[in-house]
Length: 552
Ligand code: NG1
Ligand code: ZN
Image (cartoon, rainbow, N blue to C red; front, side):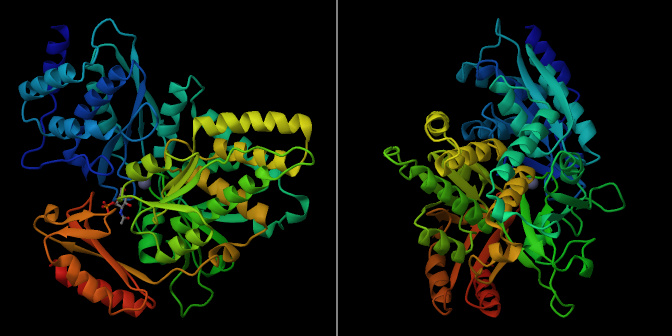
């Protein structure tokens, strides 16, 4: 009864916006910030219930609209695992967001609590961690989330302040493992595992000071701010942060990983003074990362882009090399028969050249639909699963059982053959598992891993970039009345509805050497996305255009 009246009174302060239907898409709810008060309040309730349902654990709420414009905002929930909200709760999120009145809302909650058997009374207190990016609207939305959380008895909200999306997910995971989970602990873990990887580099590989310089575009968001702190804890890497959000620049405007990857031009604040330097770009909430080089001459405006596919390739090469070393025999010791399963996960947007490259490395390549939650889920099926979206979101997942085995193997090796290449390889893999965020893709930890591997290999960004040549590609979007009319299969690579379209796409594609094209409804915008690649840019553009006409 107390619970009922608490919910009724708090929800009466948050009426949903008129005439808009919100849906929990691939990245939570996103909309113009002025429309989100009631949604965020209701997600506060959901995150609190989720924490109770999962045996009074810790869940999280992140308020961000990532790479979208500064006036937008959004909200997503982190599950106790640190990953995205379990997909079977998404319909409940939709229903909550769209409930027209407090009475409807209360009824929905009552039914859901009953159906899911969520313990409301006599339970251990649960916690929801709250974070937000630098958007001005974040402050009041965070208040709304707090109101939602505290309208569920037995659940406390803890405000982590302005953090990157991956930091918030990391904190949720760390808290549920019973570990220290403050921002300083995060920085400490990243910087110490980075140092460990650097210390394990064979001495002949050391780079010159100039090669240790990296210029980072912070998208005028939270990532730049955090990197300014993190970089002071690093030796052997000299980071200059631009677009850190401290000066004039606007969040994501002409800057950031999404802009750089889609437009293939240098972000604001970069220019001819950076020719020859290694540059990287974060997105607005620092869960995406791309690398790039400023073009050598004025006439050529296209940057040399090193995207998520190439990060995946770099990580895969390094991990594979360590696994190989680890499996080598040492003298009489036959090593171990255990063969860890390494797999890589991509989406249809992965450049075809990257998929070929990975297959040539004899890696198991799996495809999933767009959306981190799908990639993450697949990667978690391997002992070591590496996933990346072409746009720069990705990470490496290590299974618990593999890490246990690796710890034990390392113990064994360090007593039998300390300093052997096998022992060093085990140490490297352990360090990678600590450096790379196990909850979600993380631009800051990804960046440190890239830097450590480049130093290990003694590679410049060009050597890395030249692992393979990207096929020219083009992305278009087509506004449609009803994007749900397009239904896809086979990890979005085939259209099954409306009938006939796939055949027409096939006919167009067949006209182009190395042609590949697909369409899918966006999960975050009201559009159909068109993707095409072919052997030349002109061909990719022309294929994309003719497929777009089929959609219209
Ligand atoms: P949609 O709108 O479903 O294409 C976009 C990105 C995804 C992912 C989500 C969430 C592309 C083609 N799609 O999804 O990769 O990042 O946003 O932010 O980049
Ligand atoms: Zn993002």
